[in-house]
Image (cartoon, rainbow, N blue to C red; front, side, top):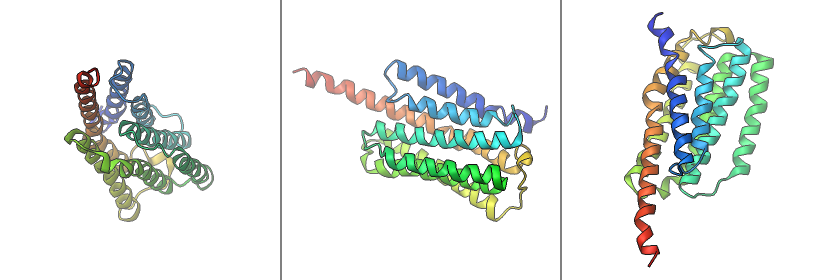
Length: 221
């Protein structure tokens, strides 16, 4: 088994471990929301369709839904962490619009390039929207680190999709995705840039828990 075959297993395994860890943290009332776990789990399942494919069209269609679901849950978890308005109606309307266009692009036009561009931009918009809403609420280094990590994830997503859509010649066939340079690029950046996000989120939660505990003695007097 060559390196390219091995590397595709890393994102689903690592994200699966992270999802389980955040689920445990939520159960222990350390994590601010179960949606952290749901986000990482959905992202991991999306990546799992590469080493464990069903059929090209099915894989691309379901992966898009999983990634946009992950972006929605990331946004919800971030907004909850900062006690910001959830903006559910706006974000759900955006997701609904994405699903309609995503269905047309995948099932009718059968365009891989259009689908990747659509999903990446939608993912970046959903996550970026939540980060924009809380950027002024970050009052400590841990919160700022989480926001910076999220912004880097958004910029990485947008940069990759622009480069591969407009500057690099790639196949438009669904069946070619798993062996594409795009898939290799997103796998590598997920292992590097993407996995900084859960660690900074964990740091922000730890800081928030410390602040809550520090306030307890003053509140009991």
